[in-house]
Image 1 (cartoon, protein in one colour):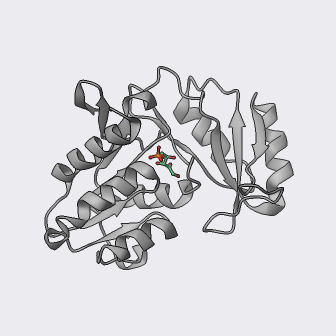
Image 2 (tube, rainbow, N blue to C red):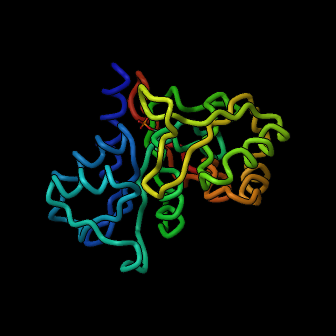
Image 3 (cartoon, rainbow, N blue to C red):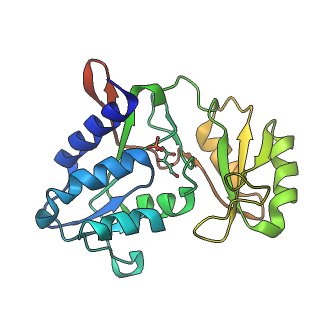
Length: 225
Ligand code: 5RP
């Protein structure tokens, strides 16, 4: 099976976690896109969705799924999203698709976080994937110095084929931090959150996944945390 087929398989399996009549939180990325396409086939069963990015909102609308502003929603039954890495306790690195801040906000409102990922995303120790940190542009250099002091190698994310900084849906910039072996994900999330100028860190540890549907050659495995 290709990686895309594995992503498609976990996206299809996640439909079982959709709660009828409810508003669903929807993540961002290629795995989330497969989930949106699967969700479209049962859209009559849900009230609508809250999107974690402009790209996700556009894809949901293109399928005729109503997109709600989070400010108009008091509760979300389930949030379904991919990850760049996940460990055995359900802590994740996210933000490869630059949507980490809105993903974290929408996930914080959801009763349940279902992570959908191909088996390559399961790791013993988080950090091989460079940790994304969204920052206010004016704080970029100051935050990079602090991240270096924490032992990382920070690098500003650039727009494809350009020397200009990549700009998020929120007007922030992304610093990708390589070289971290994250043995204490909750502690590092707290530490980075406290750096002035940080909008959000792509460590989802204090609020990690509740369930992970992991796609491998032998099918979809369900991990619960
Ligand atoms: C976007 C994310 C994605 O969930 C993460 O990057 C995984 O993406 P993909 O499903 O394309 O592998 O955090 O900000």
